[in-house]
Amino acid sequence: MKKDPKLFLVSAPSGAGKSSLIDTVLAKANRSDLPLELSISYTTRSPRKGESNGNQYFFVSNEDFLDKKNSNFFLEYAEVHGNWYGTSLDFVQSKLNQGISLILEIDVQGFRQINDLSLNYDSIFILPPSIDSLEERIKSRGDEDQTAINLRLKNAKDELAYATEYKHLVINDSFDDAEKELFNIIAQENSVNSQNIEEVQQFLAQLLSY
Image 1 (tube, helix red, strand yellow):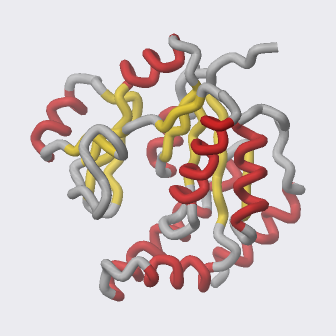
Image 2 (cartoon, one colour):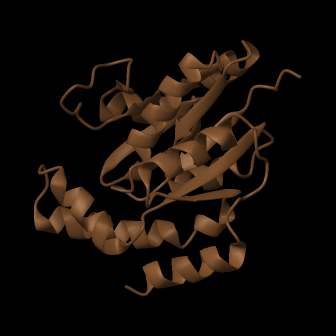
Image 3 (cartoon, one colour):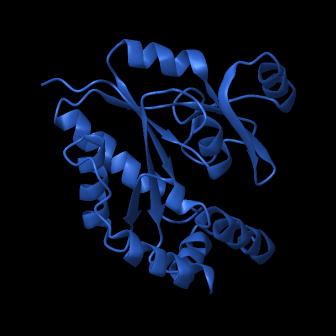
């Protein structure tokens, strides 16, 4: 039976490996003829190395973003680390109407906005195996000083506090295992959280008590 197209909301603290997992899942979906694409958001941040307009993001000025925000252009929007991010409602509806499912990389602020709307969506939160590993992953990027790293770690704890509001929780301890679990959720081969909720809550408590 053909699956209805769906919007998959994927959140994670910075450095949890979300983007790498999503890239791998998208490549696997392409090989499997699964109609799945990445939802391209708008942002006011500067492009990183290897990024180009219209591929990873639509890069716009602060003024342009705020104009769109005030005209109800966005399905959701949020200010993260001093930059604005937002998702075009028309973009999402157009893809779903074409029978294409979308992965939307989204922060907790945006997720909580969409959580109040009547959309065919599923939600996934990717957890790091530890705060220490999270810090090491952020440091390995080599593009931020310790002050910026500390801010990201603080924001990570704030985001982790909302993880249990998501339907699925995936711990990115083993990349291969996490990728398989994420793909199975998106391919709708499993429809329930594969993690025991009590175990996950204990794991989250350990992360948050760091």
